[in-house]
Image (cartoon, rainbow, N blue to C red; front, side):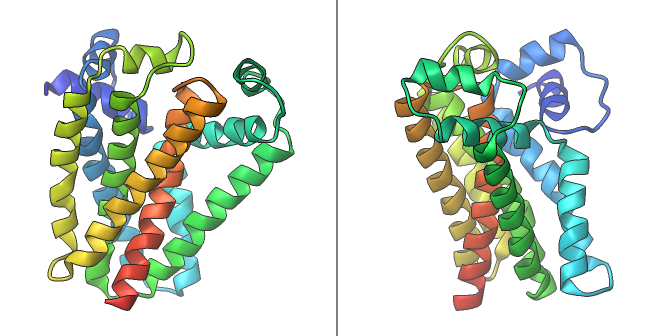
Length: 248
């Protein structure tokens, strides 16, 4: 894992101005194991929001705003495109055509609204927990990025594009390494290990569901599928972690 790969991943997964080049991008797309590393960085930047004074709801709103301020809305756009594709009747080719349409339909609006609502409510839950539970934000971000990497490593591209440029260089063995790199993040919720493990599991289940749906309905992985995986996995991981923390 090179510095160039990390720089390329940061440039792709966030809006942090790292000055990435074509060489960095090329190193990143050949190194899917870098995904959870960037997730760790982003999670550490997001978690301190909940240390600010004020009501839980206010902290949640600031958190959601910072998530999209830091990571951009490119991945959220994937949710919109998949939402539109989900409500279309027809074969995978028809659904992929809808995803390339610049107009956002009802399915896309509903998908984005549900994801943002899920993220916001999860953030309210995190804000209501003890401060040591802020580790769940980091675990969720690691899980979301590992989820993207898992889809890349285990999936096949639906067509030429971003999906094919990433999946074409990844193997199932890379997926195993990604899992090994992400797993220690569960320890961040120590001494309560269940919440961290639940967050990672939630991200993984979310990725598996999106991947299976994309394979059957779209014919494989695309850039939109990866973006949607990130957004859904983050929200699912946070909810799973908060629920486990509350019940344990």
